[in-house]
Length: 278
Length: 320
Image 1 (cartoon, each protein chain N blue to C red):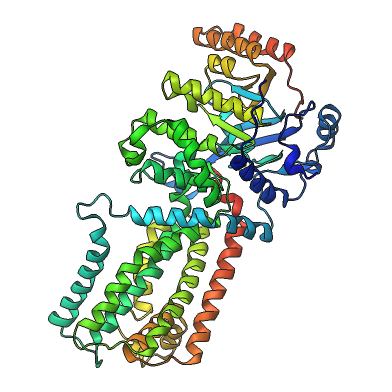
Image 2 (spheres, chains in turn brown, orange):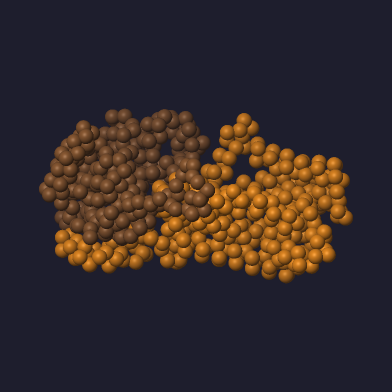
């Protein structure tokens, strides 16, 4: 039996779908804004760490939430895991090409929704036959009615987000990565999006969801990773980690630095990351 | 957890992805030993894992590029179709622009300057030169801005990055088609009329070699533009300089006293390709074998070098 078929059903022993080993990432930017003549000649790019050695593994059927403050490296980690940004050091291995929810990039505002479905599905690597079959499902999930024949530039931001989400899910990727995508769209769509994602997980997939809202993670995920300043702080059941993170974020907002620091330490103690990157 | 039965069509997609994916080398041994041991003892076999986000070897790269051919085509078509969609006259501009271009050169060189430069049909000579030169100049200028312009796409999808260069070349060729038809029609209709001869059938062959050359240049300049973004500022000068160095407007007779300059221009692939077009379309003659070999060598050389250089630096294009 080839490994094509084995991935199809959730076995009692879920396989590893993605693993990261000590991933580090530094950013480098040219200093912008007014600068002196000397600094133009002696160009010194600004650089700093984004991820400081992250190791993790996820398995079939897991819906992993990533929480953390703005700038903690959540989105960067997602992009490194998806192979869209090379890490400065470290390795990522996966059982299939991860798909980032970001079809917007391939879409052309002047073309109609239908033509954009065609373009988006091909961008994800479908053949024309598969794209043809996927079209019906996308139309159904996006539920845009007659608007699907109008140019995308006429859509509201919510409608465009629905179409983008529908296209990404239709690819039925084994590993899907979502970056705060579900905040747009009305309640009925959120419900349907949730259903689509659960279907994906039931077919032995893994979903990563980035959000700085603890509630979203608690509602949708089975497991949560907490990232702070590029380091993995905690890894555990979504509800518990999200709760600790909520308390931490609340303390930060109130300026209680000592309470926040204590929350970090206790989170690491109660739900330590499985693999300590050294 | 409920288990929904896999639908046939989605199974097909996963199978296809797995096929492309499984050609990659196993990645488990790339993990550090303690982590690998730990994972194996906890979750079992890891042999199905492959490395993510690294540059695949050439053969796999070609396979993945070939698998994306429908996307390349659809992307190029989408961009070409919507080019004039904000204009009132819309698609009419595909024909209007080249018509206006041709009329401009006709008025300036034919009516005002009354230039003939000792040629029977100077107007046709110059129109063929300018229309066909534009393909190469757009390949170079487009190449320099390619990575910067496709950043959003590169950040969203993992595909062989050379796809964007191929897409650019296909798109430019599509958008040039109306202009080529206007050009061919123009030199037939405007006196002194060029009568289509048998040698016109060589035109597609030259266009094919020309496109190969353009693809190579787009890849090469795509890489250059990613390494040195400042190059975009210099492109208008490069394009203008090349125009004079390729005998687009001025015949090279003016350099007859400078054998070195003559030799350089005659070795210039853009000059060669324009000369081939002109020989075939205007003189109605079959160009000498030496020119064909020269163009073929340039085209294949540019493609090989451009592709290799672009592929070697594959991971650069998504770096922040």
